[in-house]
Length: 142
Image (cartoon, rainbow, N blue to C red; front, side):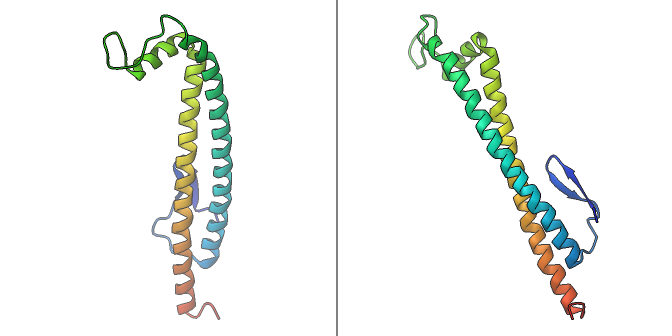
């Protein structure tokens, strides 16, 4: 009963013009619901990993803030933007800086995927209601 493929953006149902039975929509709802649970666990893990990477980055950055060469953020003469100061940190602690940036991207992608699966659950619920209504209107529910 697998008329779908799992892609990065969620599940893609192959037969777009297919008419789904209540049994199929129930099945797909279960598949999507399980995927939603897995995606929420992935978000939780990604958030924890991001926190750990941020902690490492901040621990390595703290002594650099006291460095006399650390650029001062502001709008005055000799001051730089926060982005420029971040570049200064990135040059000095690249592993921690990029690990933290990567963890942020992974968490954002995990959240986006979870929202996509949630949207697909809602769509499948609507299709399930429609399939049951069609099935019942043709006497299949008796």
